[in-house]
Figure 1 (cartoon, rainbow over the protein chains, first blue to last red):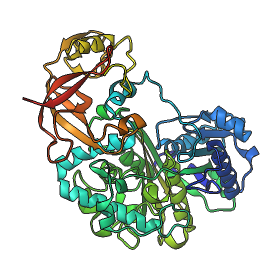
Figure 2 (figure 1 turned 90 degrees about the horizontal axis):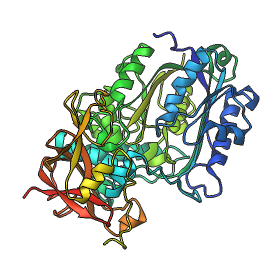
Figure 3 (figure 1 turned 30 degrees about the vertical axis):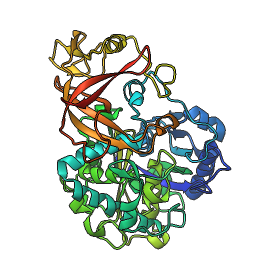
Figure 4 (figure 1 turned 180 degrees about the vertical axis):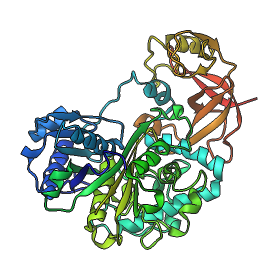
Length: 380
Length: 139
């Protein structure tokens, strides 16, 4: 194991009071509720927080709103993977003595916000892609998926997408906080309307209102707290483009760097992992990420997820919260992967609890398959 | 066309003025690095491959192949919702780089659009000031 492995632990996780359709709350309110709930979960108070991590907003905005004046501040914003990357940054900052209690917050009124953010027209994406109607994740990711289908076979890729959508919904039916809890059939998947071919509606994640927060602290402090520490054993981050047109290989995400690096830091291999949490912005994101992380070879993803292997009772527990596809997805979802992994590692996952989860791999993806953060978490 | 055009337009940058000016003349020009020999998209004054400043403009042949595509049925903004379905595309240009565009002159369905199909550039004068390079099946 690398020196920083197991030097810090996640000691608190929570969502905002409500998630899903929450028209009565602003994004910053969702941050604050999640922060309050996660500190309570950790058995810590706001006064203990000396490191603040936020994506989307600057930490001086969340800091002011929460009344936190940190000595370590990190607003790294690389899309929905940011919060997984923040976990690694927190570990490094704590090890360096730059802070001791790191609070990572997120909140987004993805569904109900009263105003939308205009993007900077100077960005290459807006100059070269937006005029063609290449705007937003569904269109960018659908193009990547078309390349995968061309390369590895359309029918088997389509079947894999359906397997993932159906299996993920099965997990969501077991999660009282999930937005979509009605069972989903294969026919429902195939019959759902087109969004951007090759994506059906049911290839795409939800758009919800939700907040979540995570508290990370030193090994010593973690052992003094009421709940069992969830150790950060490995962490890695990477990005290799921003615009989908600049992605080096549409069938390989930056997880091909972060997966092996995080596993190596933890000193474990794929076969040791009991629970895998993969950012499922789209069914394709899951398929290409499984391959990129190294769980299977290029083009082998459809065989890997066949026969509902990732569903409850299957051989490969994946996205047990119900994922971005069926649980929640406010726009940037990565922090919710960490929340679920911690709950499973603590044995707090209720009806969807996977037995004997000792190790979990979490992979967040951001932008147009642009960035990834991978962490390996463990108990004991 | 000009006054009623309601979709987003590129905001030209100093490093891309030449690109958009030549597009108005129905020409596609790319940046080429004399140091490492690579031609790249989008235009930048310093080569993103080797970081050389020894770069020049070269006119592209306008030929390429379809690398990937999507057929948009749900417009991403209100302006695009009136224009669905339309085909978004990434095109591998003969000179090497890949660029985003629309595929036009073809039925917007999966029966007619195929990765690997041969394409050629065509120019869409969307306003008096902006011409968008688009691609159609090679004739």
